Amino acid sequence: MLKLQFQASKSKGIPNSDIDPIAYEADLNQALSEVKLSSEDLISNMLNRKWMLRIPDTKLHQIMLSPLQGRHRDGTFGKISFVNKAYPYFGDHVMEKDRQHPSFYVVRDDLLHPLVNGNKARKLDGLLPLLVDHSVTDVVTCGGCQSAHAAAVAVSCAETGIKTHLLLRGEPPEVLTGYNLISTVYGNVTYVPRYLYAHRESMLKSHANLVAGFTGNVVQCSDILETFFTKQTSIALNLGQMDACTNVENHTKKVLIVNEGAGDTVALLGVIRLVEYLCQNHLLGKERPMKLVVDAGTGTTAIGLGLGTLCLGLPWQVNAVILADTIDAYKQKEKALISDFRTQFGFHLIDHCINEVKGGVVHWEERSRRRKFGNVLEGEIEACQQIAQQTGILVDPIYTLAAWEMATQLSKEEAYGRAEVVMLHTGGTLGMFGLAQRYKTYFHNLKDGAFPAKVADS
Image 1 (cartoon, rainbow, N blue to C red):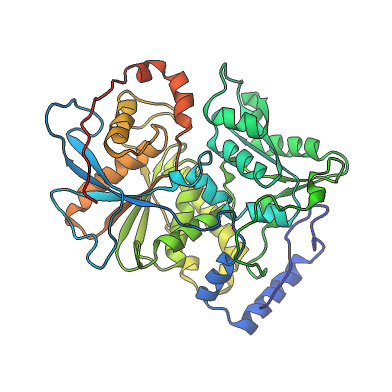
Image 2 (image 1 turned 60 degrees about the vertical axis):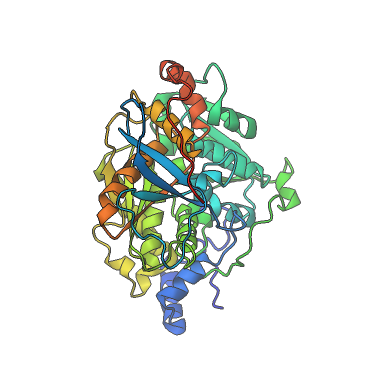
């Protein structure tokens, strides 16, 4: 197999950083001409690498909608109740529409890890092995006080023997709980005033330089991401098997900066791997039209799903509920990430439909009840309670409830259509503990036995 070792980096200590980018581009074009890589080969090479997750497998549940029987109170879902079919059948006759009882499927990525959100695990899936391969000793990243991203980085890096330095926005809470507690236990937390946090890039670089000291090196994710030609073995990372010198205090430090939310190109790889898993014939398949639904914080997971469906030629549509910014801002990030993805993995050098993308790969949608990011509206805690009591699935009011709402609406709209609706459950369980402190009145209003539960036939 052709193998080119190139790191597009100007950072001190990165192998091959003295290679001329122009000469490299010429060599890359010539290499492509010689090996005549097809788009299938390109995708195969891109995904043929080491992964953090041993296998990409995840559970799928089917949620059926039915009229709520007996006495009930009006709420987010009106007169609808939910029934969870935990072992749906995905055979040839699967997905024959029951127009009286619409349904949608839930990808249970919330079950991947007890402390790491599902979408965070997917975004770190391709990154963590690179940190080990490049002898990264420390990681610096940032997030809010209850950042699921910061907690995920802290836990995942600790499992591989890498130290984390977490810059959290604002002031420490009175009581450590939720993701903040996990971040504090697993990582080294520093609280940053909001006026400094507003300048994330310079804040991260300054702290990374402080951690590296005079003898260490600071690198970015793009510096250590191999080009798509780099030969890798598709075996899972053996957690904890790092070079012994990594953990020696006086060893020269190599400090990696991970952007807020892990919104880098490498984060797309694990999400694309998930799409490849889901489109197997014994699961969702490659022929049936699907509408994937996901909540969007940074939007990286949604973009990864969109790129995965495009690269694999699937008749799937990705619908993302925006939570933290405007639609225009999400579209700008989508455009930038797709451009970086093309260049990083060589798609710009071959004839592939990804080069023809003009309108994007994601349908960005406003949440049904708009609000400032992080706010919880009246009735949403009760909606989470209803879902939990009727299905055994916990969603949170900030992120996954928004996706559940859209999946519910789309499943009703598609009752007479061809597409099936599939929601990606990204996690967020630990976030409920922090919300319970902030929205005490809403949580005090919860009452046991508020919603009747049904059991689905398996």
